[in-house]
Every structure is written in C-alpha cells, then in structure tokens.
Amino acid sequence: MATEATTTKFHNSDFRAVPPPPDYLPEITVAPHDGLHFWQFMIAGSIAGCVEHMAMFPVDTVKTHMQALGSCPIKSVGVRHALRSVLKSEGLPGLYRGIGAMGLGAGPAHAVYFSVYEVCKKYFSGGDPNNSAAHAVSGVFATVASDAVFTPMDMVKQRLQLGNGTAYRGVLDCVKKVLKEEGFGAFYASYRTTVLMNAPFTAVHFATYEAAKRGLIEISPESASDERVMVHATAGALAGASAAVVTTPLDVVKTQLQCQGVCGCDRFKSTAIRDVTKTIVQKDGYKGLMRGWIPRILFHAPAAAICWSTYEAAKSFFQELNACTESGTIT
Image (tube, rainbow, N blue to C red; front, side, top):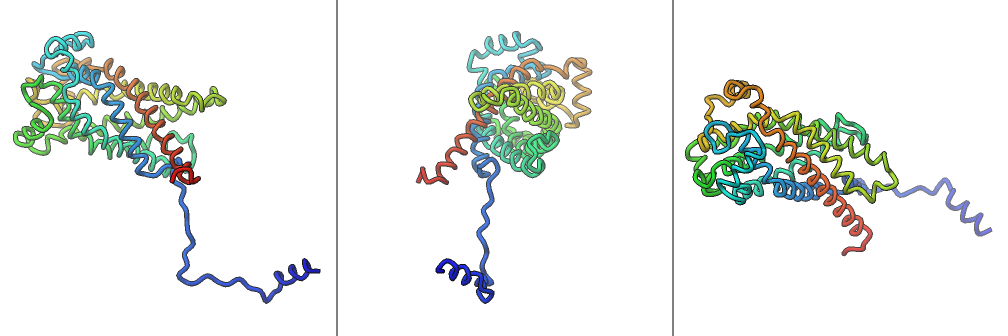
C-alpha cells in the first residue's frame, strides 16, 4: 500500500517541476581534442621540434653548404666532399655553428605548428580520422603560421652555418648586422618561398603520416599499443622522406635568398622565385635545383621519425596526466 501511495503521489497531475531561475545557465563541458588542451599541444610540439632539429643539425649544416652558390667554401655537391670540407676548415664545431639560432626558433615555431595543426584537423576532419584532405589542408595552415615565427631565425641560422666565424660572431651579432645593413625585410626575404615550399611539404607530410600510421596499425592492431613508438617513427620517416624529395628545388631557392651576400654567395636584385630559379639554372643547370637532395632526405626522414615519436610520446604523457588529474589520483 505504501508503494502504491508513493507511486500515486509522484504521478499526480498537480505535481510540477520547479522551473529554473531566468539567470540559470547549465554547465557545459567541452571535451578537449585527443583529451588534451591547446597549451599541451604547444608544449608537446615545442619539445618535439627542439629534439628533432638539435639531433639532426649537422646534416642540415651539410645541406646548407651544398645548396649555397658563388665562392663559398663548399663548391662540391657531394655529401662526402661537403662534410669533409666543413670538418677540414672548421672541425667538428663547424657542424654545429648556428645551433643557438635553431634552438631559439624551433621551440616556438613547432609549438605553433602542431597546435594549429591539431585545431585545424579537428575542425576540417569532422571526426573522420581517414580524411586525408583534411590532414593536408590542416598542414598547410600550420606551416603558414609557424613559418612566420621560424623564418627570421632560420635565416640567421643559415648565415651562421656558412659564416665560418668571420662574418658573424653569433646570433645577436648576426641580427644586429642584418638589421643595420639590410633592414628588417631581410629576415623575411625568403618567407614567400618558404611558405610555397612548406605548403606542399606539409600537405604531403601530414597526409602521408596519418595514412601510414593508420596502415601500420591495421597491419597489426593487436600489438599497436605495444609498438606505437615504432609505428610513429616509421610513419614519420616515410612522410619526411616523401615530402623532402618533392620540395627540394624550392628549398634550394630559399637557401639562396637567405644566404645571399654571405661568404661570397650571390646577391639577387629580385626575390621573385622565378628570377632566382633562372639564375640557378643558368649557373649550374637544372641539376642545381636538386642540390642537397640527399642530405635533405637524410635529414627529414630521421628528423620526422624523431619528431613524431617525441610528439606522440609527449601527448601520451599529457593524456595520462589529465586522466590521473580527473580521477583524483593527482591533487
């Protein structure tokens, strides 16, 4: 009887819910993408970028020397000859000249790079992890933003790599001299070329990485979690090598623009890509546009493997940290 009375009571038509006050706003919780917040993507990207570029810096130095024209110390296009010449003229420290500029630029640039990519990927993919077009477009947006941050320090880095200690004493000295002699615009002389190079580079890179990662996981789904570092490294290496080959000619043009006038390298009246390309072809033939393609692959394949595995590891760390925080394990 008590149960029936209770049931009747709560089904009484006169019983109505109390309406919420007019200023009441329900709490809305938005789940962060991949379980991470924007600032966590930035930190993960910054760590990955620094580790990648610091580890591969000597290869980048050899590539820069090979791509420079004019009366610079390195005239041979061979990797072995370029490496031998750098070691002979400057010793082992010569391979690391300019690494300070790289450190100053890589961290902030990659923080922007990966955070913008993740935000755009979430927006454009519509929740579809197999949307290669969304990955490619997101990569283009990411590189436009990150290149605006990285290009000035990349220019300083390449000039220091070629300067053998005589043109510039360090990062600050290089910045001061460039501002005084060439103006602020010199820091962005290659920005247009860099974006035009990195847009297809990142489009190929991110689309290849996501597809390769998905394919490798599908091959062995039961061991994907145990071998995730190997999966990310392999997918990253494939993506880096593929993108590097496609964009080498534009990378040569970029190096020419950033290093003009340094150590006897050519100066250009125009920064137009067509004019610089024509000068390179006239002086060195079409093969000149592929200068440094071998060290470029040797750089980008392992660099991408290091970068992606580091980035994914950092993301996993933050995901576990967030899970522990939400469960109350960490106070």
